[in-house]
Image (cartoon, rainbow, N blue to C red; front, side, top):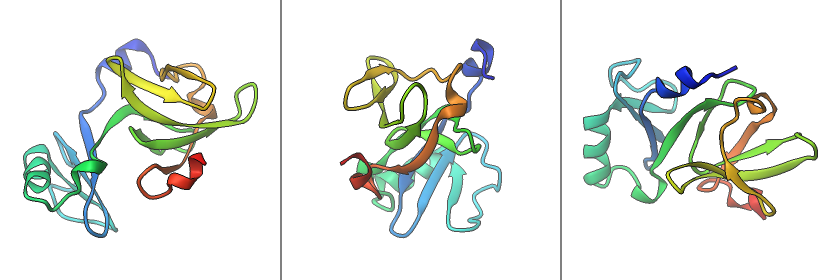
Length: 134
């Protein structure tokens, strides 16, 4: 379970879509900028230079929330999550009012999954699968 101290230590990480894959920008990339699998993880300077130079789509720029879903998948703004807390539902993560918010058709509340994060599953994102929210 995450605690308050864990949230203050989250890594600053961003994601944006390139022509064929997602790119990740972070302070300490694990692979020092060498692409692996279908993703690219680079330092923040390279990431934002690629964004500025049009290599990455600025409309897909999102920030990491600092949390992972029940399967260990990182949760970013724009991710569509499904949960089974009280009743089944799905919604999207947005940055509003100075923090990350979980938005469903009927709900709009702070995304602080300290208690229920183990019930959330990333099922896609609004950029590649907007129909998930239809």
